Amino acid sequence: MWSHENIQRLILDLYGKVSRTSFSGDAAKYQLTTAHWKDDLGLDSIELMELAAQVNSFFQLFAAPDPPYLLSFERMEEWVEQIFAFKQRHNEVVFFHTSGTSGQSKTIGHPFSFLEREINFLAKHFQHVSLIIPLVPSYSIYGFLFTVMLPEKLNANLQYPSEPD
Image (cartoon, rainbow, N blue to C red; front, side, top):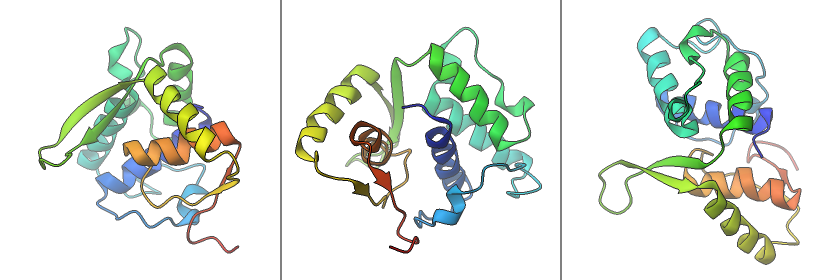
């Protein structure tokens, strides 16, 4: 489930959050496979630190004794590789930021085994689905369940709203 492609998509969705860009479902954004944070994506030092904090929180990089230090890498693909290697060793909990109905943002951890149980349940109800159209960013719990985990489970394709049929 933690493929390079999924990790990259999660990082790019978090980049959209940091750069305050609304989720558009633009497929071209996800075809970017190499990018320098400053030169190609235009992040200044504060935005880069905010993105690193968001990525560290989502992937729980500091929860283990051997976390990668993302700010020592200047390119997105280096972050993807570091996170991929990390998730091969540490995959117990996924954390999501949510405001729920209160509007007060908080971080909620979901054991990966719970998320797998949820996907196994959903896969029974969506077993004939072969195509999923993402309408929310993958870092949200529903985006993660329906555009990262469910497509993996069903071997379904993702088609962004901007892609032609």
